Amino acid sequence: MQGMYITMLNFIRKKVTEQYPENRGKVFPHERMRGQLVMPHNENNQHKCTACGICQMNCPNGTIQVISKKEVDAETGKEKKVLDTYLYDTGSCIFCALCTTSCPQDAIEWSTNFEHAVFTRSKLIEQLNHEGSSLIKKSNN
Image 1: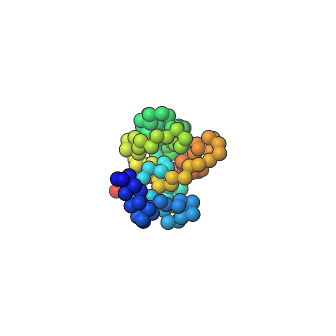
Image 2: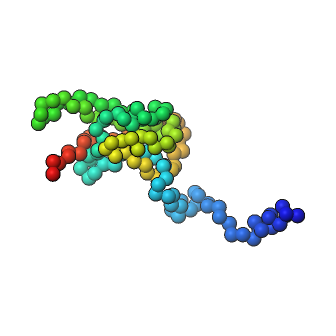
Image 3: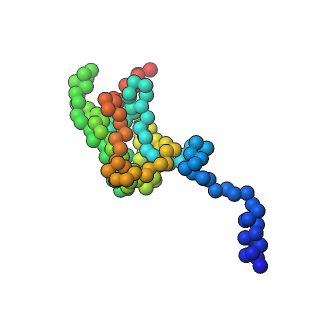
């Protein structure tokens, strides 16, 4: 009888199911949701990543790949490491956030984009740094 009582209560309660594809514009995930890793760029196509590789070392399953190159600094004449390609594999990411918490520059962060469905695994690998982007120059002020 108790089971029938609970069933009858559920018939008269307001429904809470979200009809996702139909109500796509009405569904807003929480701002702290770990949906997809992004590298923010400013209006001058500059980012904060110094290619230190700490995020790559802390990733437990090799989701992040930081490829850097050496360039000569025009001001000092010394060689320095510069970010060439920052690859992120959504398909193998476990969304643990070790990469974002360990980044000393806060160069990467989580977006609330949660739609990752694609037909091939190769489309899950993304380059986070934009083409032609560069490091933000720090001012001494």
